[in-house]
Length: 366
Ligand SMILES: Nc1nc2c(ncn2[C@@H]2O[C@H](COP(=O)(O)OP(=O)(O)OP(=O)(O)O)[C@@H](O)[C@H]2O)c(=O)[nH]1
Ligand SMILES: [Mg+2]
Image (cartoon, rainbow, N blue to C red; front, side, top):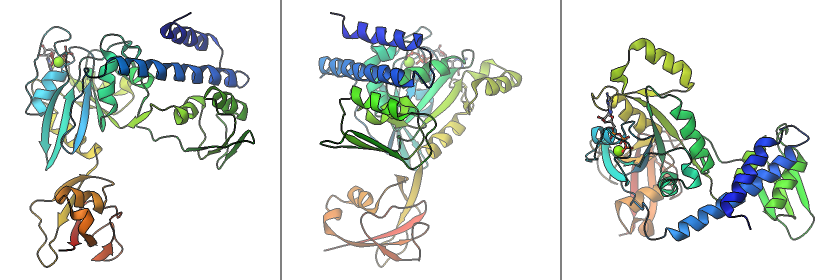
């Protein structure tokens, strides 16, 4: 019997060989769904095997950033430049063999950075200790890709590696609703015109997932891969930033060309000279979407000195939980002045979502 790895390779090969067009999409969709399930299975097995060891790093701070990049791009040097950590720097590859955490304090936010061992080609297939590394990356709030200024092609490779591991960068989860039914077959409807997928493809994919009776509602036009994403259990959606390192070794003109070649926005830095490091901190802070919330005691003045730093989307309940362990239980109501309310001093409940620079008063039972 062929092993799981062999089956995965065979499927990858078959997908590569099959021409992609409207007539073959359902067949390719089926193969890709099969492949997605086998990869999930492989992942489950390796996590089960590796339980107890691996790179479990405790999350701390207000957000966690995974620093990824090829060996020797300068990840450890950057971690040392940004944080209080002391990660070993080497002039040879794979100096760092464990995940090294550091904390960056910036504008009141505590950002945990994880220097993870060099991602390499094939990591998502379990080569090296890649798979364990990937599990750390998957739980990050932001992925910072560090690229060597002389090896721009590293960017594409990293994106592909992450993609194969179920990590979707700078994307929202697919807007698809799938409801299992007891009978009636597959019913597909959509709220937008569908150009990228056929009903036949949808049915072929669902059948790979052993779904034969279900109602499917699509709220976006998507292709077979994104439809599989909606079904697969291991997809994560994480924002990313790119930093180009070692710019001390190149000139202005080279950088200008790099901007065109890379085809996406990046921060130009030198981890060893410190150039661009302040800009990078600023970009980390803004991409993570921190907001400031000023607390005001019920009958007192607003504390403008020390705002609470939280992520965008934070609710009153989350602020309560952070201030005191039984604030949520004793909560009566809150009052808000600022962008998230219609009028100053509006009363809100625990589910209310705060905005940057809101003033918040929490009233609890004694
Ligand atoms: N010129 C220059 N050299 C740098 C810069 N950043 C790092 N280096 C050098 O690049 C080499 C590798 O740096 P590390 O920080 O160890 O790289 P790493 O990505 O952590 O490497 P691994 O842990 O092996 O994956 C060292 O010799 C550093 O001194 C930079 O901005 N400019
Ligand atoms: Mg290192």
